[in-house]
Image (cartoon, rainbow, N blue to C red; front, side, top):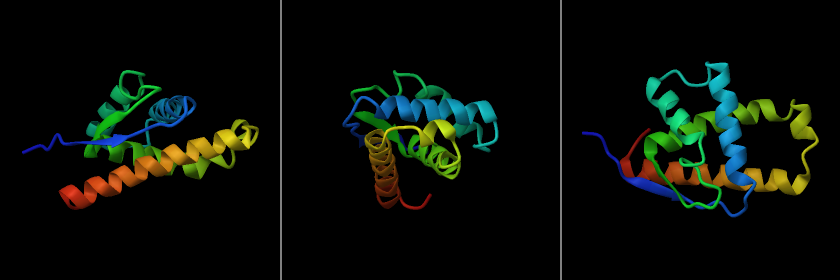
Amino acid sequence: MENHETYHVYPTHRVQAPHVRAMLKRALALQNVWHSTEHINNANKLKFETGLSDDGPWHLTKSELLTLVIALDWFAAKREHSDSYKSTEQWIKELHREIERDIRAAYRSACRTEGGE
């Protein structure tokens, strides 16, 4: 039986949702970040503002959170080599990292609640 319990992520600034949506779009363009149709479908759904609104809160399932965590891991490995990211202002980088931490925390909470990965 599939669990549809949702977990909440609260963006605190309007640069956070566009950052996450852009990350999903880049990951989808590569076609090798996720190896599961479920995660690809989640990413396609979430990459639009209706999935991750600028204002939040975001109501995400454990599967959607895992989709985001996988993309975050991929992006973290790439970001320091990106010229465009290097030129991003420090305060914006901090806001990006804040929402990334919040997504990871929500996923950990989902794992504790539902058990396992």
